[in-house]
Structure formats: C-alpha cells, structure tokens
Amino acid sequence: MKLAVVGGGGREHVIIKTLKKNKTIDTIYAIPGNGGIARDAICVPDIKATDIDGVVSFCEDKKIDYVVVAPDDPLVLGMVDALKAAGIPAFGPEKKAAIIEGSKVFSKNLMKKYGIPTAQYEVFTDITEAEKYVQTCPIPTVIKADGLALGKGVIIAMTRDEAIAGIKTIMEEKKFGHSGDQIVIEEYLEGPEVSVLSFTDGNVVRPMISSMDHKRANDGDQGLNTGGMGTVAPNPYYTKEIADQCMKTIFQPTIDAMNQEGRTFRGCLYFGLMLTKDGPKVIEYNCRFGDPEAQVVLPLLDSDLLTIMQATTRGTLKDVDIRWKDESACCVIEASGGYPVSYQKGYEITGLDEVQNAYIAGAKLMDGKLYTDGGRVLGITETAPTLREAIAKAYASASKVTFKDMHMRHDIGQRALKALQ
Image (cartoon, rainbow, N blue to C red; front, top):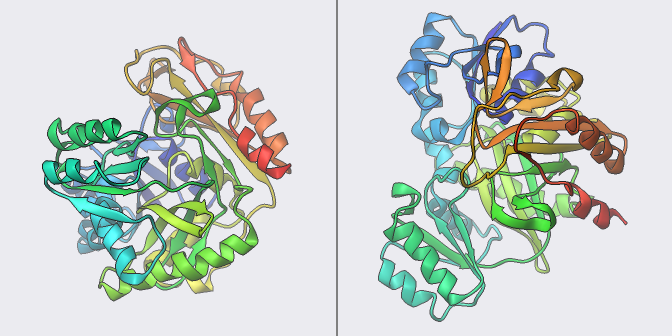
C-alpha cells in the first residue's frame, strides 16, 4: 500500500511512525513533511499542506491508496472532500463537519441547541457591543476568535481592562486575521483540564486514552500560552465514572448532533474538557489529533492504526477491536529559546541517534544533519508501567538531545503526579 500523510509537524511524525508498524504499507509520503520526518517517510516539501489541488494531483499521480489529512487548515478548507471526489479515500472529516473546529460560534451554538454542557457565552460581531458587554459580565472571562488561529486565538482576561485589550487585539488589530471578525465571550470555567481524542465513523465513537497538556511556556504554568510544551497520559483526573458520564452527556450527543445537522463527522474528534464542580463541560472541539497530545496517546495504542482509520472512513468502526497498553506516557517538548514570541533558527540538533521516540516538529535537513527550523522543534516521548517512570525516562532521553538556546519545561507531569497521591 502507498499512503500519504498531509502535514509537517510532531503530530504527523508520530502518526507516520505508528502507521509504519503495519507491514502492508510499502511507502509513506509526507506532504510537506520536515527534515526529521524524512527519516521515516518520503517528504514532498514543494507542496503545502493547504494546497488542495496540489495534494490531490500528487496523490492521483502516485496512485496513493489512502490519505491521512492531519492538520486543521486543510480539513476546514475541504481537502477530504476533494480527495473523495477524485476517488481517493482519506482519514478526516469533510468540510461541513470540520466546521466544528473551524468556527467557535458554530460549535457553541451546536452545544446550546443540543444541551451539551459548555460555558455560558455571547457572540459579537461589533466591537462596541463586545466592549459594552465586558463592562458588566463576570470576570475573569474568556475571549475567543471565531476561526482558526493556530491554537492561539484565546485570551483569558483576569480584569475588565484585559478584556477590553483582548477584544481590541482580536477585532481591531486583527491579530488572527479574519478569524477575529466574530468573537465568543464566555464564562471562565475552573477545574482540571482533560484532552480526550476519539475515533469516530459518524455513528460509533471510541475515545482514546485521556491526556493532560501543559500550555504555558515556563515551569509552574508561568509565561505565555504556547501550542503545548508537553503532555502526559492517561490524565489521573479522568476517572472511569467521569469517562462514562462524558460518553453519555458529551461524546455520543456530539456525534448525534452533527448527524442531526447533516454534518456527519468521521475521523478524529478531539474533546477539550474542563472538569468543573458542576460536572464535565466542553471547552473546545478540534477536528483532528491534538499536538502534542497525539505524541503520548498513539505510542500507547496496541492495535493497528491504519485498520482503525480505514474503519472510520468506511463506517465499520463497531467491528474493530481497539486495544491500549496498560501503561503511561510522557512527552517533553524541546523548543527554540524565545518561543512563542521570537527565536533564532538554524542551530544543529545533536543526540537524536541516542533516543528512540523523538517526534520532529520544526527541523530541516542539510548535508545529512538536522537544524532547528521552528518554535517547537521536537518532542521526546517515553512509556512505562507508571507515570513516574515514564516522566523520568522522558527527561533522561530529553537530556541527550540538544541544540543552542534549547528551552524546555522541567515540570511536565508534576501536576498529574500530585493528583495521583
């Protein structure tokens, strides 16, 4: 079989490495891939992940049997639809279903209509009305750009002045472009956060192992929000009782709601949850694998990933046995110094040959050597029978890989360990 994986980050790298365990796969192309992924797949650097026509014609030309569309942008733009129209099966939701991530306004309205628990909210298209609203709404509050913003279009305002500044940033200064034409202002929820990725074929939903992300740049959850500085799985706050409750009140109702709307969702649906005193509530949906959540969840998968993915496309997920290892995983992200604001690129990465499970996100290959080429450069994941062991192993491996100005957090998983005590 010949496969193509669309995307070029750490998430795509772990997907490729997991797919490679299937011996029926002869070749995997990564479009565009990156210098680190080039060790595990044939990279196609001259086609962008959002170039729908380019991807379709490449896949036709190479007679690709199956495509995994991993990032949000091409899904929201309708890449799965275009591949399907060309007779090429693909993993991921069609455009009309990917809107669940593509528009915060759509997803909030969906939850309200179908009684799926989430934060109270208001929608604004007018900056003056939004500013007027935050003069009286409860504080802290959360302000979200409606559209995609590389996972960064959310501002938590602790004061009214911060709320006004946040509205200006999104709506007036257009920090996230047209994604900020509409905004959602919602109630600030408190409690442990949980990420739950799930496989779904539009009828059956099969949650994966839960995980805990660490968004802030620095130790102690200090510093700016990032795309994620590390993850652990499973999330100790996510008990069997809570999982059962989520299935009944959130997971299956979301799949059913999308069907009711004529927007059947197939692929990976990500549930970002807050475990509040009033029960679990949805903070956000993503229409794809989270990054870096995928880097801890997929290494714990004990079944064949391609079989599961194809079942979501064919609508046969109920017939597939999905097994998970009874272990824990920890992923530590190594980033460029200065990330997420400004950073230098082009530093040589050393020590990668000494570690097994490095997932490369931002690196380029020159003369057989890897050099940094992004903010989040790579993630190193280790699994073990206990979370404490997985964390220790991940940091031991991370200490072997280095580059100039390398930055990482040193407390990934510590909150989870406290919760286990």
